[in-house]
Length: 250
Image 1 (cartoon, rainbow, N blue to C red):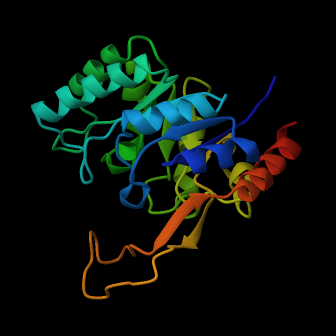
Image 2: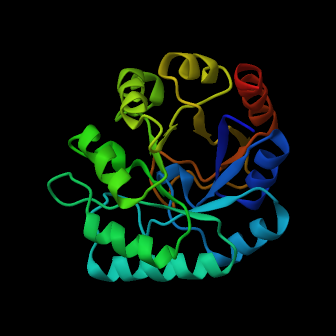
């Protein structure tokens, strides 16, 4: 039986195919990765579901920004969960916070109920909680099976101490999955140092847009993001990471 998990974080059909070919065991399907991910469009999910054979969990996040949601957004998330479940999602990736930085258990329970028994990942809303140890226990109580975390830092290599502590606290009751900055060249160190065996990576590379004419005076979105760079998952990076985990854990 496989004793590790490599999850690909993808936001396109091309990335889904590349991650599966490279050896990803599961995918988190979303949209808009450059802003942390939002809910995938059903049309894109249908194409991915038809193309890949590995399990698909879907990110449920109605907008960029914080994790304090209004009632209309909660209803939107419930509907998205039911829609994507009907289209073949194998699990959901959710999270909601109260203003005081604790997990909003009432909202989480509503989303879990909408998922109708599908496995649940608590996404990186966890990294914005005021007390990570308390949040882990709350997640266990809710029946969440996986917590995606960088150790409450921008990148996981800076959160190693907390990641190790969370893995020890979890004690097999819930999977702690390391994400944000996981690469083939650091995954072995992360695994050995933290004891974590679940990893989440985009394995992305950048290719240039095919646009010849480019208007430098206009930005369609955030000024730090170029309209003329396209990021997609790289099969080779997944292949390297999968090989390293296979060597470590068999």
